[in-house]
Image 1 (tube, one colour):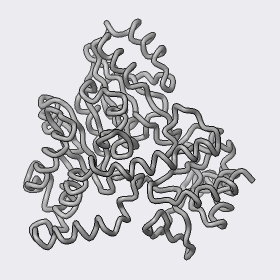
Image 2 (tube, rainbow, N blue to C red):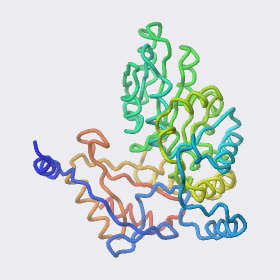
Image 3 (cartoon, rainbow, N blue to C red):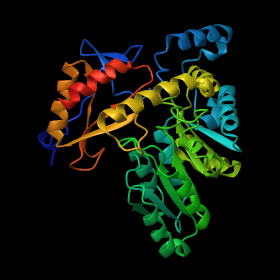
Image 4 (spheres, rainbow, N blue to C red):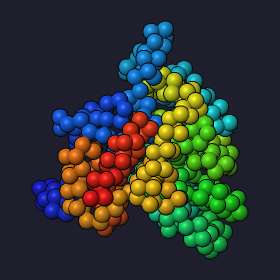
Length: 380
């Protein structure tokens, strides 16, 4: 099948995607196709990316630290790209979690595709949640380990696999997201910790959609469920509630050294520029103090849950409105955009066949009145 035929097939199934030019604005708005809309598709959960006061404060710091104003990077971290701001950022992350060590990557995708491939080998087994993100799936595919997907958030299924197979393998990794990116529900991290301890496994948790957004200090679901120090490999991203770019992993120093020597997504990519790392360090230092923003997000989430009777196991700032058919999701999205609400359709292969949906994403700077108006229209 040639490329034209493949593209026609994609279009005929309602799966054609396109890049969109969107201008973010303060207070939960954006401009799309010349129209000002309430932005319900952003992962900027705390509203920090468009916070003018935050940007002003950072710009003042830049004037005092002109060496931060480097907009390019010379090479990989293992050559000349590892500036002092990398060391500062990793120290801040390590201290924030009270961890032994931390390592910074260019993105969550770099972290997830690099870590498991570097740390696992033949004779190992990786157990991953069926709804884990594509970056985790790709990282597992790059590894030499055996792989089994367990039923979504089903700890009994994990244990049944471990009972039968644990003795056949050297190392076993249990891999899960904490708050799942497309369904918004939570993993039971306490149960996963119990299983990893019982079966001598390594627990890998991706906190991409939780870090910054939940927890008294913004550490994510691991803080909410009080298992911060029980997770062997904890991945967080800067590109969502943290309003920056890049990602990090928190673990013991031995694993850090292994990844510096083996993770291809760290070794063979150009480092991030000073300007990015300076903003990242600035945000991390402030993250424990964004209590008001987390409270506002929780209040909006509570209101949203009441509007659509969502289950208590959902945080509520990621809301899946499942419609089933791809074309229905596209048309509903277009209708809501005409009403002034930016919501996009999520279709396979991002989600399973027959579960096309609108992924409604709340941010702390959205007005409650705007959210109520949205749900009125959605119910109609």
